Length: 204
Image (cartoon, rainbow, N blue to C red; front, side, top):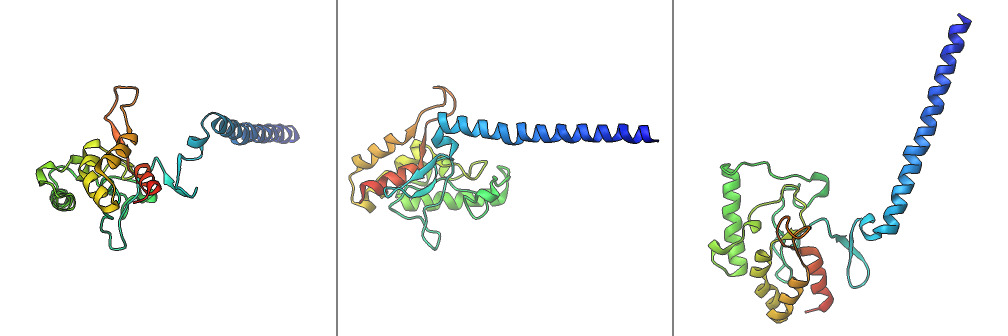
């Protein structure tokens, strides 16, 4: 009986020590090492790829999209507009998701038809010329990028609203257009948040 109790006690003590050591090594030590390496090698990315305005204030993350609308939800004409978002009420990081609606879903078809008409009216273009990413939400609902084609149809509106030339705005769009990953994966994209922050920096 006593031998069994002592044996059980030793096992419990060994297990407890192992748990404590592994907690310190993997739960604390590993976390500190990874965080330290991240801060040394890629500090901006380790901190969340934060975007700052001209005054140095954090206005968002280059990895997360956000809406540029007024209190009524209408697009602000002086800003480039992102693609639609199905995350919560729009770009809600706590509810990241797509709509999960199929291509034949009546609600999705109606939403796309409405978006096409709205974008065409806002940009003054033919509905047939509205880019696809202006009509459909991304899978995460948080995508901060649009296609160069969608950015291009917004240039004239933004330039007019800010009193800038088309060439000035096109230059900013080009500056914030990223190429394909590794040179061949995916398509070129424009980061809307970074582009709009740069627009605010130059004024207009």
